[in-house]
Image 1 (tube, rainbow, N blue to C red):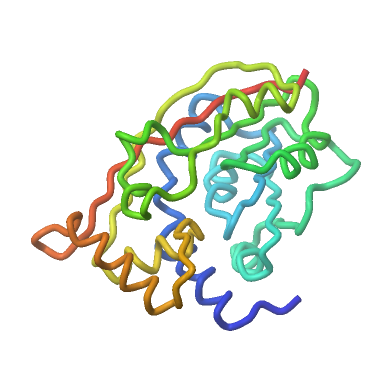
Image 2 (tube, rainbow, N blue to C red; image 1 turned 120 degrees about the vertical axis):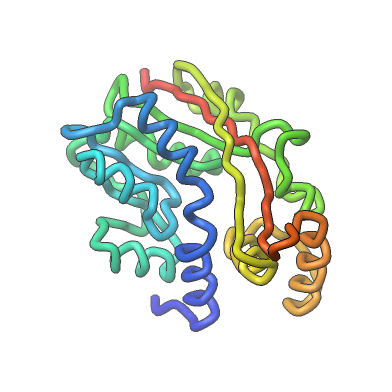
Length: 225
C-alpha cells in the first residue's frame, strides 16, 4: 500500500517533531533491563523507529512492527527492519516494547518472546502529573497497565515512572507534533481541530515562544512465564 500525501506528512511530523519526546522513557527502560549486545528486541507499534535506533545503538538486534505504511516507510529509510505484523516462528526475542497496546496486539506479539523474556508496557502517569491530556481536552484514558499484565498471563517484575516533558520550538510545532500522535479526538474539520488545539496550548507558551508540557509516564516490566 502506498501512503497518501497527507499520511506521509503526518508521519514525518511524528518522526521529526514528536517521536523524540519519549526518549527519556526508552532510555530508562533500556538502562533498567541493561539492553545491549546479544539482546533481541521487538518493538510493537514502533512508528518511525526511534526506539529501535536507541536499542541498536546499545548493540541490540531490533525488529519493529508498524501497521501504518507511511511510518513503516520512514523507519525503513533509517535502515531498520520493520514489518507490518508480529513475526511468526523464528528465533525468539528477549524484550518486547509496547506503548499502550491493545489486548489483541499484545496477544499477537507475545508468542515471539522467549520464556522469561521481558515485556515492557507504558502509558501516561497520574493525571495531575501530565499536562498533555489536559491540553487535549482529557485525551484517551491511561491504560491500567497492571491489569493488562494480568490479562495477558504475564508475571509482574517491577515498574517505574519517567519524566518526559514535551518541548516545542513554537505553537505551530506543538500542534503538528500532537496531531501526529493521533491523540486529539474531535469531530470537527481539520482547521477547527488546529484552532482548538492552538488555543489550548497558549497557557503553556513561554515568553520566547516555545511550548513546554511536562508529563510523567509509567512503565511496567513483566515476564513471559
